[in-house]
Length: 133
Image (cartoon, rainbow, N blue to C red; front, side, top):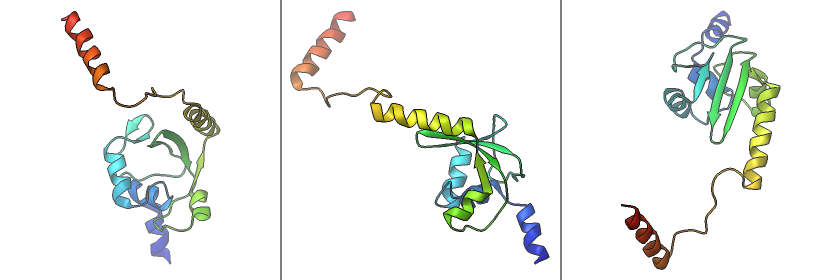
């Protein structure tokens, strides 16, 4: 049993993110870290970084950005209720995600179009572009 507690003290960041159920696989967690979607203290991390209790990480997944504080370490992936005990999301982060979700639902984020232009519209676009050159 003593060996298990030592393992929990030294856990890789990609393994912890996987155990905390932020990513479905360790490979996805590693890819997210390497592509710069995980930050600690404003800097990019490496997959082998050892998170410590109290560390604050900023994670980008899809449209959302979460700020989480590490509460416990684990190398074992368990059910969602247990995984949620490994971290605590900051109140500011929760508010930002809710506001962003409301904006997305309202359609304020991004430009909505009617689809591809018709042949006539394409001719008009080309005509306008040609007149400026």
